[in-house]
Length: 236
Image 1 (cartoon, rainbow, N blue to C red):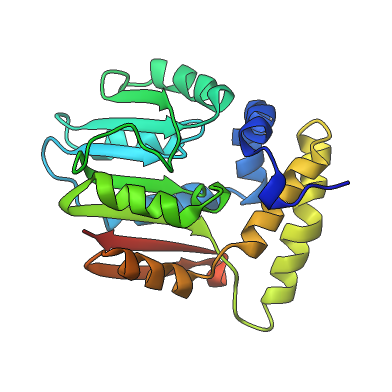
Image 2: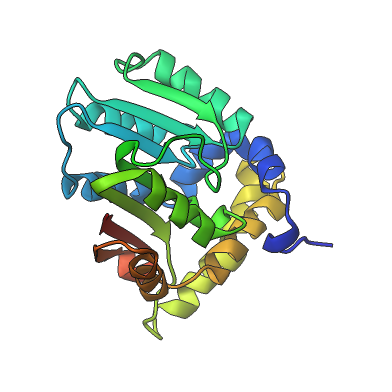
């Protein structure tokens, strides 16, 4: 029986898919996830000596991009609860030009091991929907941000165009799990779960309202690929 997102052991799931995760990201998104991230960072501001944390950092792609984009005196912490994902990420960090700027740690995004007002920038890419309690995670992000600090959330979303939506549902609901079976050593159920988390996650407007409810002063939203993904920029 397929588990629902609510009773899935997400940590075990990501440990299992870690070896193929980067390859599958490229296949599933047709390479667009990298372009989305570049567009997102182009609109971010990076203070000198910025303390940055990338939550649900996975295999550290965004942590590496943040290290490249930020000032040489800045530091990037990448946090994830999957030790196998972090192991893949650490190998990439070790051979990069930014190994002295990046620290990867295992931890829970809903109970961050940091003091209040520790970071200038908090990012999370395609990870918020996998938290058992996304709102608790958002409250933790608010807590560890400094006043005036930036939160940037890049996440899959649901197109609301009635012409586009059926194709999107077919791709994520049917094609993506098959890709998992074919290209990720038979991991059909794991990628079926990732589809379910996308379909059941709050829409982009609900997320924006939730950020304001938590206390963020401003929230700006941009959408990609006819609504297949959305980025939320919020300021504490």
